[in-house]
Amino acid sequence: NRWIAPPANMLLPLVAQQVRRLGYFKAVVTTPFSGSTNYRLDTRLILLQQEFMQPTSKVRLVLQASLINNNTNRIIASRRFQVSVKASGNNPYSGVMAANQAAAIVTTRMARFVVRTLTR
Image (cartoon, rainbow, N blue to C red; front, side, top):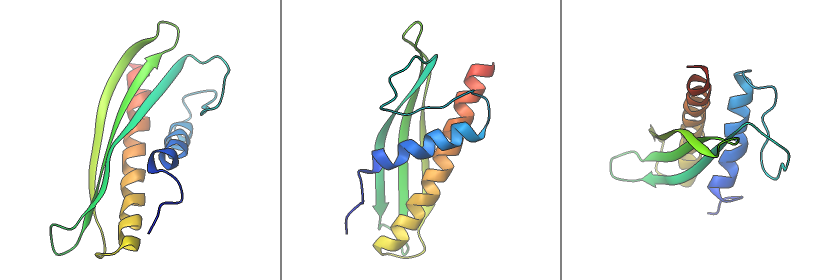
């Protein structure tokens, strides 16, 4: 079984979509946008794995996010997001479904982190 694209590449549009949904920014853009922006969210996929340690597998997802002020090029805030989601079975399809759930949870938390950081 293979991913359709590298997992980190598939997470980028999900993060942007969640930040857009909160309605705080006039625009939310992703690479390869080359215009001027006030803030940048750098993310790094640390871990995405399906673990088979218990009767039913689970998916662990860990992402690191750094919010950067582009005017000063300084990190405003940085945080690690981590979640484990129980899969419905011990097969690749169950792992993908759990990974989708994990991604939704983490990207929602990440979007809230961005807005909370900028509104305090």
